Length: 383
Image (cartoon, rainbow, N blue to C red; front, side, top):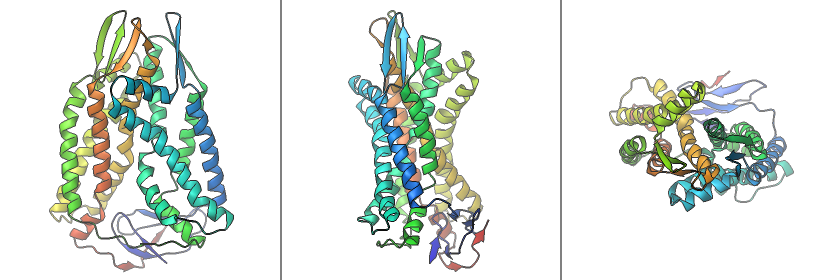
């Protein structure tokens, strides 16, 4: 059986791994396979436990806000509803997808793929399930939602009394368990299915990446750059207290957190909402340009940069989650209210476009245009 590196295109003969070992590509250092003590039954138990906690997280309030003797509780779904009511359906749709629907589908797909293996049976629709899993997994953002909740609690602490709810604890547990499940990626599931003899149509050697992908990536990056300007200049939310309204931009929120003494959270928001989107655009643009130029320089380092862009992509959604959660909690009529503003639409667009651009760019193309092809190698590294 062979292993293909999905970052540089090198091909290797699979080797037997022992506890604590992993197999990595000798060309770009990407990990191709890791030894796992968990079998499909173990993973299935984790998925089911995650699903139960996920349901609790969405059924109970995340927090209750008390202001001037009035109280307001909010679940995540309430935040989506309020955002939709305010007319920002684009933001409501995106947040509902990445924090609820797609994580839910992610868990269902894992059950679909793992259950037949755990029962020793042949699965149905395995290939379709794998393809759908590959598309959905990067958009499951429960850990990002948790960080957004934490920032929201800190922001509201200086304005009113905020009591964390059962939903917050359950969301924290869900985030931890989703992080554990992140070890089950598309490639590890493929290998597990083969190891357990599940029959499916395996297009093991992917099609060579096309230059059309470069044009699409440039178009997506250009649109993201255009949207990034209003995302930073326009306010992302409006706070009205006793008839007096103030508008807040992304950078203004960072400054406010710092002034309140929350330097750690201010740094997280600054990195996630300002530095990361800027870095993603610059790094991805550079990688695409070097690929077009058939550059042979620093290919291994460029692959690591691409992995970084893949990893940090979703964390820029923190500010979007913060805005919709604040809007759900801050609903006290004329006394105190929080509403989203146009900047949050532009910023959500930047996050989505840069993620799509990164997923659409195939790093194997950089190696192929530099003269490296998918020939068999015996140099698979065991670490």
